[in-house]
Length: 503
Image 1 (spheres, rainbow, N blue to C red):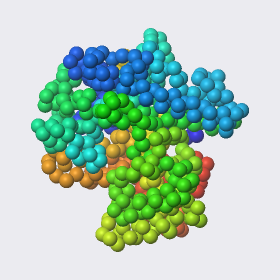
Image 2 (image 1 turned 45 degrees about the vertical axis):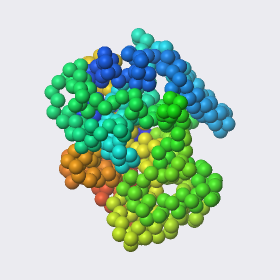
Image 3 (image 1 turned 180 degrees about the vertical axis):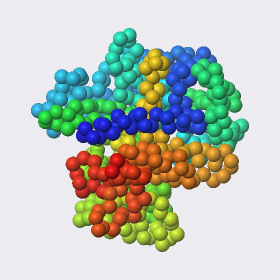
Image 4 (image 1 turned 90 degrees about the vertical axis):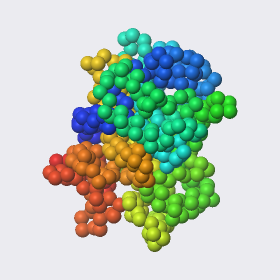
């Protein structure tokens, strides 16, 4: 565990220059001064409250936010999730104390902050996700406004709390023919050349020809929440662990409310294992050649009947198979899971025979890894910073104390792929929406990631082939840069996945 924590500490230093460069590419807004000006803009404020209730002109604290008719079901669902988490803990670990503050074995998130007048969700970043246009081509993908829960009372420490709220908007209106996907892609890419800073840059981003001009309340699609529901400090009786609760609430325009919704590709493992008929239906659907090829490319959209409405993920999950991983138990060589290894091998062969070119999944182990990282929970267990892929900028902090890293290695490693897609859309070309595994990004023909922690540099995920064994085709290319070697992480020497460290 000490090795893992040291790795994270050094990684925060290593990824900072890349994170700042990515904003220059025009696909994210992470500068604290610009975000502060956008949130409090006098005519087009992008505060959470202003978008949920356009009659408001300023940000509001959480007690008022969750009193809005649109958010009442979000609050109720989170309250229910806390109650279930506590009940489960008391059933399975009655001797382990749980509560708010350091006096407990398991330190619970302070639920009172969700409706406190001394806390609010502060705009911490804006991310262009036109690479998600494969989900809804007619809206050109998404724009995501990410808010971080922050204490506002003077002297409270720490001010920023481990919860983000992601407001997902359609990038353009379905009925707006005046803006095309190519137009919008060009606006985002052009913003890389803006030289203005602070409020002046915010104004330019919001101008009629700016990339944020299309953002209105009418474009809201859903809210995604991610919070560190509990933290377990390392002690003589327990290992260090944090649990993260993730939920999705889709906006119902007919009643103007957010309602709990299935989470995209968050397979309901427990239900699939308990319901044999449902498990067989999922196996047959996913192993069909067309769906398997989309699964390999990372663009699969699993039907909602197989999905869960809640994700409870834990970090560190480690590289060895365990119940902390979403796919655990679904693939079983003895035929007790939803998939057998024989099922997977046969399906891969059928897909290739029918003309499919597999880019990532070339073995049962690759299939299992994709099952993990295609889910919300599995993706957030991989290469996050404290369980988040976009912690965001601290816009309320003094400039001298600003954090250097607004995003995780996962986010940074995916930026070249996203930019490649946006450039193709701008140029009227067919985008390649495929993606690699969450912890091993595609290089997309570019060398900008080579030797960096997000690809094959120090701390990168890599493959450790067994001595005198046949290399797994899904991971054979996961090597380390010159001077580094793929080494074991943690106590489990059987894991084929390791990290690149000095030889």
